[in-house]
Length: 324
Image (cartoon, rainbow, N blue to C red):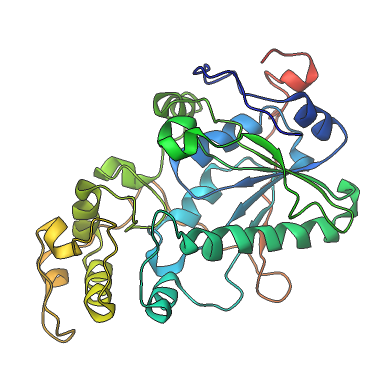
């Protein structure tokens, strides 16, 4: 069974929670939160921590290596709920996005987003299957929460925010995909973060509107230019890869130097943009924390934060008598 909420924007505290979702949570299902480090997954994590018991929550992150904004893992660790485990879903082959682009001879496109499938979805689903198997107390039941919003794009507005995953509902598993903040606006999302006393990822304060990959096929010209200023070494790597494979990151067909206005010498040994622009690191107000200790095969790692005194996950809990 799947369902969609009424087509209206909801207040930030009024999440869409289908009756089937309520039932899954009451029955003790695992609720996994896919955290990219961006504003949407951060706000989603904050809101779900108010309605889901902590011992049923799990945060999962797919590390993107060199293409990810610096400080992303630390940001997730510093803003996730206390007492909730965090696991990492790495690409099993160890190949980076740039490795895959080089092999394929082309960049992902709006209709061929192999980056999302291979770097995020597949590793995350694999690790969630492993986690369910290792924790039989959930009875094979899982609600996989994703921070997708209706107003991000026309394509996303057509997504179904609550749906059974037939692909993953196998081998005794009962799996649903849920987009709890589907009807929230960008303003709602930033308000949730602010009212909780947190700050969004540092890149938003640097004039970048998207967080995850530093350079994305969906990035605006302004975001690409700002990313080039903040990460000149990576920008040069992307630009040289474009030229080497004869295919552009931008679906427009324009190469990065044409979009950003920053030329790149094709000779990797020639002093270039990285020597003209000073890379920007994560601000000092978000200090790094120790990386979680790997557990089992190097594919997963888990970190538990101690619960804070007096902290409750049942404040404003619509699953326990509140309103939605």
